[in-house]
Length: 212
Ligand code: DHB
Ligand code: MG
Image (cartoon, rainbow, N blue to C red; front, side, top):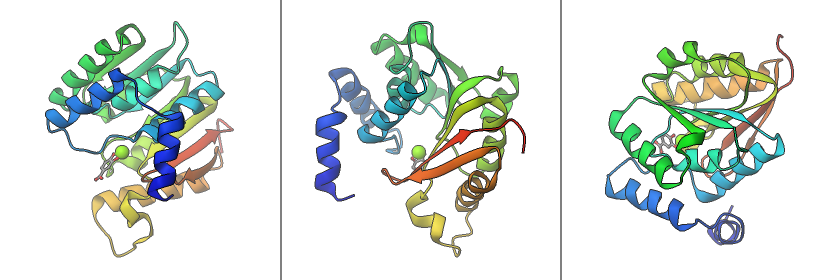
């Protein structure tokens, strides 16, 4: 999408309120890696959660809480976002972001490594958004599928990974993880999936069956 059209979408549909702008500014001030989702990707996630009337959502990789605010704001009273973050500095900033957005009652942040935390969660999530380290993506795929309810949404950021998805010469662990995830999502008979070309690619799938 050309920059002017992206700007058009953002201005018209994904304008940030002062709370989101402040979270983004804090993110920059604290020198967090500038890899958070864009406003139009945030709005897309928000719309998707409304479409399925999501109540319980899981995020792997909170970073500074920016995506979590877009996700949690789509939940009804009594709904809950569970978000996992392994970096204590990121976790602290994310908690403050949820407080500033008055979402602390709707967000449970669990500090720890995703592969340690995932086995402790109860299945039945309406949506799982994966936006974390890329090497373990195949394992996050299996956990996502296990923890989703039938009809639930599997969402994964960076499906293109700056073009590495289509560069077989890129044998980095991250690129291999992204390509493996995309292939699992494409071929797993429990899932109907595609990639939306927003920002760095958002993979979206619906879990249509509990077993292949
Ligand atoms: C990068 C971007 C992301 O959105 C992410 O989740 C991880 C890494 C990157 O640009 O390297
Ligand atoms: Mg990402």
